[in-house]
Length: 205
Ligand code: GRF
Image 1 (cartoon, rainbow, N blue to C red):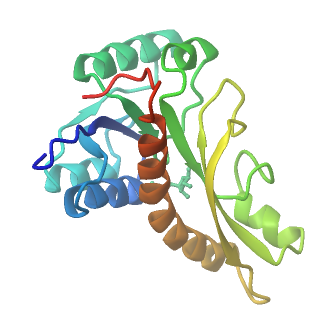
Image 2 (image 1 turned 30 degrees about the vertical axis):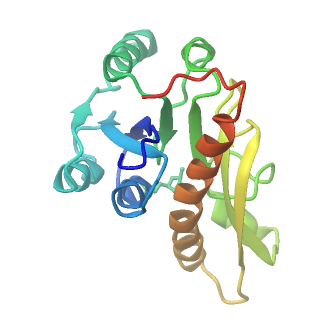
C-alpha cells in the first residue's frame, strides 16, 4: 500500500449467495486503508452463486466439496488449501458447515463469523422466525470469533434493527441482512486494527 501499511490476507468461506462476502470484498476494494486484502474465496458447494460474484470482483475462488465425503477429508483439503494461500484471517460468510474443534484449533483467533441474531440469543438456524415468535422488538446481527462451540465465541460487534409489528421472517431477514453488510466490513477492520497493537503475534501478509 502507498502508506506502507500491511494488509492482512483474507480468505472467505461461503456456501451460497455470498452477499456478506461481496460486502467484505467491496469494502476492501473501495475503502482507503482497509486492513484486509481478499485473496481467496472458498465454497463447499460448487453451485454457490457467491463464486460467480467473487470472480466478477476479481478474487480467486476454489470449490472444496463437502458432500459425499468424511468431515476429516473435507477439512484436511480445506486446511491445506487455506494454508497454501496464507491468510492472516478467515471470514465465514454464510458458510453452512460446522467446523471441528481440531480444525478451529489450527486457526485459533483467526476465524470470524457473522450470525443473524443478537448472540447469545438464537444461536443456530431460523433466527428471524424465533425472534418474531418470541415477540422481540429488537433483532440484529453479531460478528464473533469462531471457537469450538457453535455461535458462542467472543463477540466483536453487533448491529441492531427494529422488529416491526407486521414483520414476516422475510422482511425481518432483509432488514437484518442490510445491517450485516454494514457491520461485517467494519467489525473485521476494527478487529484487525486492534490485534495489530504492540505485542500482537498474529501473522500478517
Ligand atoms: C447471513 O444472514 C449470515 O448472517 C448467515 O448466513 C447468511 C448468509 O448470507 N451466517 P449471504 O450468503 O452472506 O448472502
